[in-house]
Amino acid sequence: MFRNQYDTDVTTWSPTGRLFQVEYAMEAVKQGSAAIGLRSRSHVVLACVNKAQSELSSHQRKIFKVDDHIGVAIAGLTADGRVLSRYMRSESINHSFTYESPLPVGRLVVHLADKAQVCTQRSWKRPYGVGLLVGGLDESGAHLYYNCPSGNYFEYQAFAIGSRSQAAKTYLERRFESFQESSREDLIKDAIMAIRETLQGETLKSSLCTVSVLGVDEPFHFLDQESIQKVIDTFEKVPEEEEDAGEGEAEPEAATGAAGTGEQGGSGDQDVAPMEI
Image (tube, rainbow, N blue to C red; front, side, top):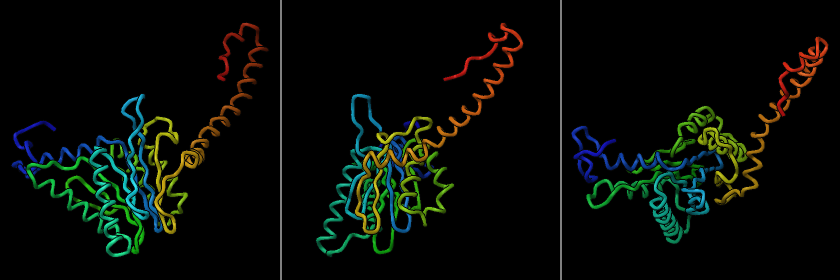
């Protein structure tokens, strides 16, 4: 995208019917660290990549608790996400105080979308540069919504946003049909494996991701590092065991070849490749 005469403020339409400031905000979401959400009948799992600005700094939080039955994961401008999560928390508390019942997830998402849409119609405002994955549980079951900076919102079975999220989407598209009946443990495992897809070759460690879960009779909470590492070990050790088995089969063959070469003559030993350790 390049600067042009139609992107000076958010209320100026281009001849092709586009609002460039809104598109720039949606582009900011793509530049943020990846966030992933999945849901089954009874549980919702939110996960994100812990991305630090430098080796000397810590990462910023990307998952926030709204209420015991609602959580949100963000990608994009973290400051905007923090403000919106505080707004969602306030709405949830007000509803609980007024009606003495938990706020339905869909109603909160509509309020959030309306707040984002106002910023696309005021020349003195700018769109929020953050995308939100809102996961929650209410009387109608588990829900996962994506709120866009444009004010649109969509409900998903599983979704990924942020940088390099396309790889995670591909993984989720292959598996989403089984998510509805998945157990809590399987849902967490699929979320972590989707996070691994976004790392593109980088070794997955518990320090590189944050995972949260909520469900029936299970309030929103974060998984500790040890629990995440145990899940990672269940599928990271499998390739290592296969490699070890392959090396074990290769050793007898190499030993047989070396013996045969030794029988032919001492000079043949120099042609034998050393074994890798």
